[in-house]
Image (cartoon, rainbow, N blue to C red; front, side, top):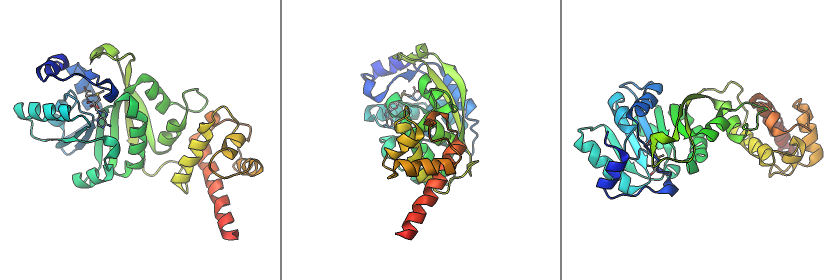
Length: 288
Ligand SMILES: C[S@@+](CC[C@H](N)C(=O)[O-])C[C@H]1O[C@@H](n2cnc3c(N)ncnc32)[C@H](O)[C@@H]1O
């Protein structure tokens, strides 16, 4: 692997901060990430933000095919050329904003559930995780490098200050696990914070299935939208269209103290609550 600094100099490219371009400069770590994903030669990998190819090259050696999507056309041009020169012909490099890519169409094209890899740009990592959750029927597992704080948030359990909307959404449908810590000095240019590699295996069906998953995610968003407020107040001040007495009654029916806060409620508690809110809405529709 040519060093990121040498490659960028040779191609006269400056790393763009706004695209989170901190390139991994350690082939052993890149191989370890691919190993953690347990890729074999039947797998099709979607790599988000391949950059200069640190992870792409070992992924291509292990997988049947790699679809590598990067938003920066300078980088995709460089990567496609470098891979060709190295005789690597099972990588399909695409220039696109991953947030605008229909992941279901990629898994349909692959004809099988994808393995997703990515050293994610910090400014889009939560949006990408939500995107993966919505597209999870076409995804088997993901191994993602995230800023350490983000990794702590998505792996957090109830009662901790890191526990939030993403912890519940992911806890609902997957088992996220922290796999490895990565020091900032292993990147070029070095970011200000350390990273953590997280493994996500989607559980299908969820352990506590919600009657209406979209409603569940709306309830979670509303509850954490005002995380310092009690659940009664947070939900009644949200777009769920519930007045305070109704919130109190629905929370009590779900055996949840209305004075509790979102950060103390488990995934199964949120599912119970959203199922009861769903039944309440249906009864209103039937009456109206
Ligand atoms: C942290 S770098 C990782 C590069 C490489 N995977 C590595 O580990 O060295 C993030 C990469 O994501 C790309 N990127 C940023 N925003 C993106 C987006 N919205 N869609 C796709 N790629 C994006 C950047 O151009 C950059 O190459």
